[in-house]
Length: 143
Image 1 (tube, helix red, strand yellow):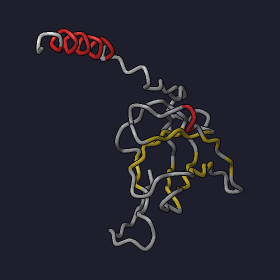
Image 2 (cartoon, rainbow, N blue to C red):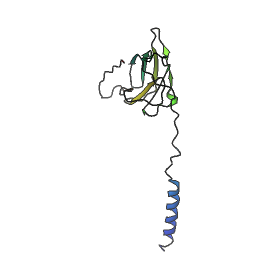
Image 3 (cartoon, helix red, strand yellow):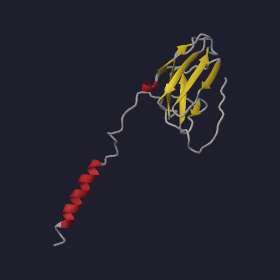
Image 4 (cartoon, rainbow, N blue to C red):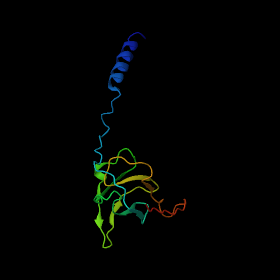
């Protein structure tokens, strides 16, 4: 009686292994930003909250045209195209981009100019949810 069960288990195992080919076809390919990161003359992070921040800058140290957008994400190697945020120019000549829809207490990386990757120095951490115990931080960025 035990003999017929063994071939059924063997075939079932083969079928299941055939489905696990190592390719994760459900994983969505993310289009990354394709701009060029610039080094602004002045760079500020303002009004950093649990779900938003203003990235503000002025000029370009290379003397080229200043950037008009920012890309951001939680992986410094993949800043998604869908994160690209246009900047507005203020009356004082600064460019600024309001980044919203962020997750609280999360590290984000950003590229002024919209490059698809960035180094760790271009990062910030959103504030924790208001009312929760947490850390107090003071952020200052001026390049």
